[in-house]
Length: 513
Image 1 (cartoon, helix red, strand yellow):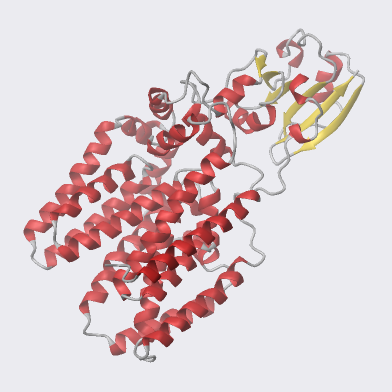
Image 2 (tube, rainbow, N blue to C red):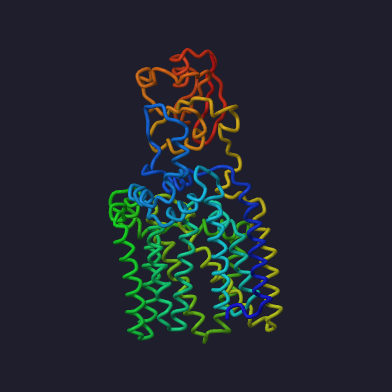
């Protein structure tokens, strides 16, 4: 049994409840959305319309609301989710979950749809991290400490407040490692089913899972071959291979995504051109998000001391080294590959390996300190105390990447926005997604592409009862005197022009008679 006493069980439950309350406090600070988060809503809930890119016509604001949320008629419409993902560049599992949750609340757009999904996933991850550290240390307090260290890091909190598939990706990676260790230890075929599920759903969650799965399976199979366990090598490798094959064949759009999408091309070009290059950017992400505010020299010193202690005192304990090898070889290999194939350098791609690093760190701490502190209670208290001291140090002054606390939306500054009309001037169609949250509450919206002959592309008439007109202009379009906005103002004979709001992507102007 992993949890030996009722007291430990209730401590875990109490800690998870406290973490849930803390998470909701963090959620309250989230005010804005990354464009990819808008896609999470739209690709999950729109009715066979993966991108909100209708242009050159007056559209009701409900067009954008229906992009973000299912209606009574379109809820639980999984055919649409699959269709949207075929048109996009990601597999569909996360979006199927997102659409299911959204379908219970048709017509309601709220950040908590995505955040609560992530919270549930992170609580499961907290428990899995606990169980894996316990598997390696057999110490409840140390395992609890490591779980807290991960959950209360900028790394985990950024992943949890980012409404994308990366928390789910992380859960399936950690689950894969957990069920593999259990299979290797207990040698029971019953663990092959959850392993197959992790392989299959991982491939249906993010394509980078295939990179980790390949490296991880390779390391495990090499380990089994070295032990001359031929049958188990074939069993494990066969389970992995068949599960991945099933994932690929059940969503064949993956082949088109890899060959023809921008993300697929980035990976192929990276494999061809960059795989031999060395970069430290992703290791920098790990240090900044997992060890925030802790000097690198201290991290290195502790690592060297603990590793030296283990080498000196526990050289003969092969099991520990094997477990660490199965953990760290795929992790380090994954980071090296990803940093060379990802066109976009972002910590999101290494979110899945953060818990695995913490599992290694805490098992190393425990193994390294054990020879020096024989009394297990004192050792446990030392590690717990250190963790509780480090957690606030890491979070002090840290701004979470996906809270967007300073973001404003036009609805917060425009009275009776539901009675107003808006003109959206864009450069490229994909940029329209950046406007969705700002224009969804307007009565009427007209998206039009910027050109040198705006007189010919602007709508000839404004909607009935339009007094003031609100104009959204991409920041990269000149907005000074004599600009596009002034052209619009002159075209409709408005007398006054004033700036209402400036965001990171666009400026909103109010035109008045």
